[in-house]
Image (cartoon, one colour):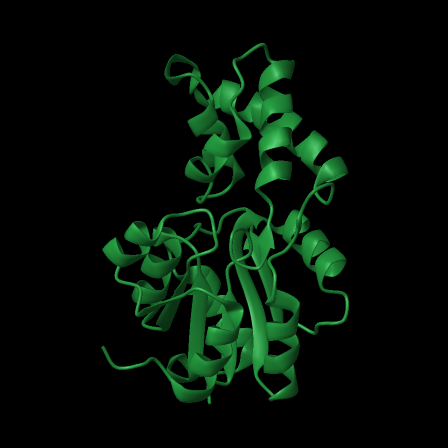
Length: 222
């Protein structure tokens, strides 16, 4: 039995894409730039909100000053609306409860800015006790750099071999690989299964219940 499961947030525990897209489009409109369809946003997210702003801006407008200006407008709107449409994926709350009841420690490691991560976790999972909730912080490299995972391991007092990392993107799979932790890719998130395979997910699951089985029995042999 694994002793710790670390989850990515966006696209893994929570479907946040509508709120992210609405906030980004608002920031673009405020600065008189073209907006994007919400359906396109899964391909923009994944490396923190600053990189999101860089990707949604026209290529000729991606200088630091413009990115920072649009990012400020994004955060102002997102902080007010981050729970308008966001909700856990089906089966996630039950999974977290089942892991908790088996004595498995739970943690979150996200590239979203830390304050928003904390608010979303408190809103969506008020009855779940996470041993660590980590978002992007000033001066700390974003995933796939494994620093955030090492911080979680230190707080949880759990060894790498006893840990499972769960995410929906190539960034997550690369994070787990660099941290030398078993990885689980989820098929219900923002990225295609092809990407999870390309980044060498140890296993890919189609339902949260499968994660419980892996936590209990380990990565299945291929």
